[in-house]
Length: 120
Image (cartoon, rainbow, N blue to C red; front, side):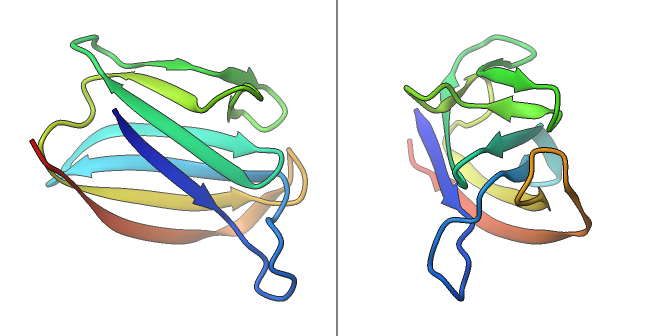
């Protein structure tokens, strides 16, 4: 399984920024394999990608209508089951689309991108 673990932190206080909404996308070369919106009430997101031949992928998490996104159960990560990661190089794109409230969206998202390598 592949885990993505991220937190948006306030540089001034060092605390997690609460009620953070992210648009998460995973790319292999130029092909988009995954795109979903996820939300964290405490500012911390843990996603677990479990390999499966299932098409399309499924998400085991609660769907929050106020933030229009998936939210983890308190007992675990947002779990994605499907054919997303296999050995190779990927790009993960994160856009912070909302902060502070479940339904407050930023006029211009904060964008982050980072490489992920999966070994066989």
